[in-house]
Length: 429
Ligand code: ATP
Image (cartoon, rainbow, N blue to C red):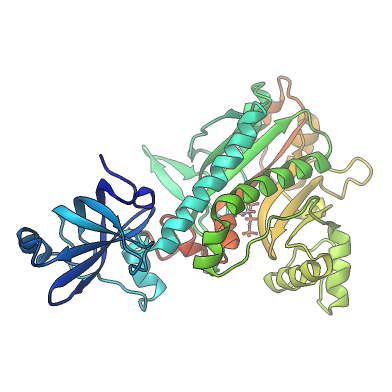
């Protein structure tokens, strides 16, 4: 039975499988480093004692995949964990050609050979961290009786503005790839499912070449019934995120520090909150040309982030009380001030990671907001119908998982913070 490399015990017979990481050939000895997902170990071949293995080891190339049976023994001179494996059998499962990329390759060359690039310990750690983050989030949700749904990704009508949709031919008709499961999570609420979530692909046909945009990414979408106050949603989200980051810190904190060189702190609760109008005032004081009612530019977002993080000594902040006119038409308006939407954006290290809101669930008001924002009620009728036959008050939020991974590990671009990146000029592998 195969042993994971990190679980090898001294003075035991082991069978390991992994990629050849390094080969050091000396006159009488050969040292082969084997790496699997869990660690690396040295295989020590005494050329005189193990002559039968030489025809195999001579063929070996770096990155070939091998299975080795042998004995693990203690050796304090071996830097890699003070142990080595004395092999009895070496089987080559697959021979590797010379790699097309190395550490010097640029990001695009690396992405061309993403499966090779992902073998780097830094990238496998990234994947493990992302797995634990999502797993903890899911457990948090399951503990509270959330129902998981899987909404269709081929849709007939856009859920947001429509400008960033990929179109496709659907048996002669026009269809789109969904840019958010928004309508379906609200449908799930109207279906009486009360607390729902989905993790799934989200498509955006935006020609953005920033470090934080992809044309396909993974969204974690959450919606809850019987919620009236946006504060409740923010409290729910901050607990969920802090809990997931705490789990990551406990399991991978040290490794993250060693490999990514960042000290990663679990955020304290509550995260700071700031109203849009106060954020605008800060920007005006910083000499930016912005009025309440306008959305932030990228520069303004950046400057505001730097200011708030420094002032609050906290990497996260919620911005609330946005003008309704720059938010989605289905956000509920504040009862006291209908020009304000009951929603928020959550930022981490100055980058938006979430949009959340209370939704308008009252049919007549929703129709009025749809018209006011210049949307076609005819086209959106299928969505509006969700609210015609009884529906609880509800709210929720959507998180971009890849942005979280990027920020958590201090990775410079989202391209390297996801399994396979999709961008305006990248659709392979
Ligand atoms: P941005 O203003 O940064 O383009 P957005 O306002 O379009 O984001 P939403 O539609 O609110 O974002 O989507 C919810 C979340 O999904 C965002 O907070 C972000 O974490 C993530 N997200 C949005 N667009 C992208 C993208 N193109 N690539 C990766 N993640 C994204």
